[in-house]
Image 1 (tube, rainbow, N blue to C red):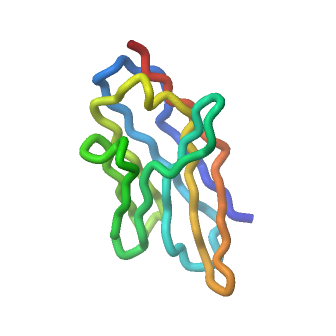
Image 2 (cartoon, rainbow, N blue to C red):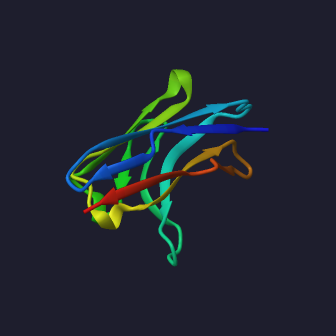
Length: 118
């Protein structure tokens, strides 16, 4: 069973920075991509950023220029550097891994809370 261990959430003032990390273990199949999603109270879960094994990235418009996603394939870790945080970034952030083929499977972390105060 794939396990995803997230870390780095917490409380920060608006304008500040946080770095989230997610380490995947017990992954039998090749990882195709890793991503961060977030879910604020009353909202649906949304994609924040995703990165492929080859390093191609995609960001939500709301975080472009402020957040940076990176991957270390050797240790199966994905990180999200969050700068210039805004109160609207407050949410539970979830790590996501897509691994394997035919069909690929999604795996989710338990979530880490990021709270941005004004």
